[in-house]
Image (tube, rainbow, N blue to C red; front, top):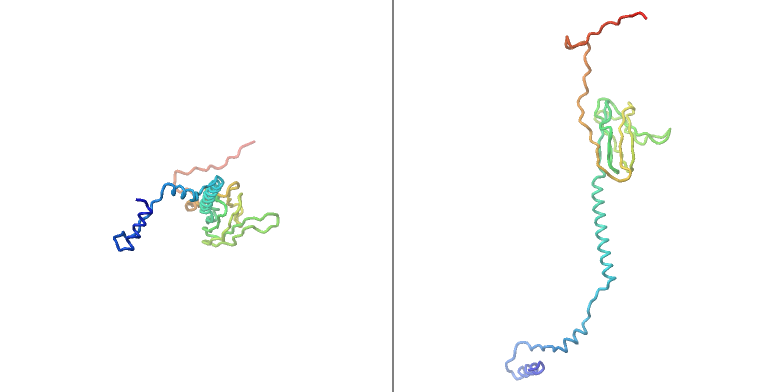
Length: 211
């Protein structure tokens, strides 16, 4: 029985009160109808240009994501504050190696007033950094170093005491090494005379001789 006659029978039974299914039967499309439907259905195609654009966009996303991740890792090693100790015996450490965009401050761990100076450029230039007088236990203000190179500070009251801050030139960061070394107490000067009898050298008087 064809699809059209089956549908006609369903409506006839419905009008006469005869038995009929709950829903009208669905006609079955013939092979010719399926071919016509396929011809009318649009087929979505992707051009090679669209594929290249999509690949380029994904590659750019990966590159930008990697750059942001690297930038975040680099920032983690910047903005740190390093403390250099200062006393009558000198700076500790005497060489401070740090990455750019980090800070250095000076702490007086001695018993007398100290003052840290970074000379300016030129004969009569003002100091590029001046901590002012630091009493024992005081910490100076912080100095940032955004550029690479070598910077040398000295003690204003004892200029032979110096500390060198070393920064990378061809890169923005490297391994930071700026930790004060453990320093023991100042050595006690020896007492006058011979503390242990029999272990001291005997000083003989000078003997004149003829020429």
